Image 1 (spheres, helix red, strand yellow):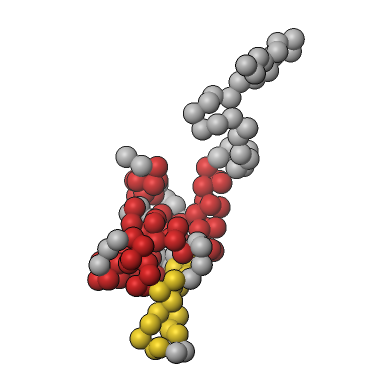
Image 2 (tube, rainbow, N blue to C red):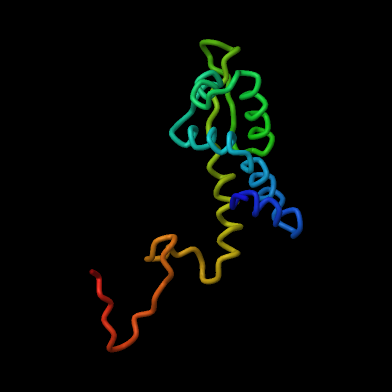
Length: 132
């Protein structure tokens, strides 16, 4: 089970800010997370997104609708072609989730100096840590 799925389950059990819960639920799908990652690099057309995620246009469109309804992304019509839509990430939705996650971490969200799999070790007085 991924961390996103764990958070979605937590949101269903506990009261969570409605916006953060909606965004987390929308991001529970790996394809939608990939689309958001692609849009973090800048706006893209639906066809570009479909090609990059390797899905059909209708399947990609369903994922885009979920992200649009959760306000994770926005779309706009292009002046040169009213049928074409350009999708962009709405960073405020991600910031809402980050703010909610920051509330769960005691002492804020300071990054750890240790790696993700390395437990933190306190350096005891008089004890040197061998770096070899």
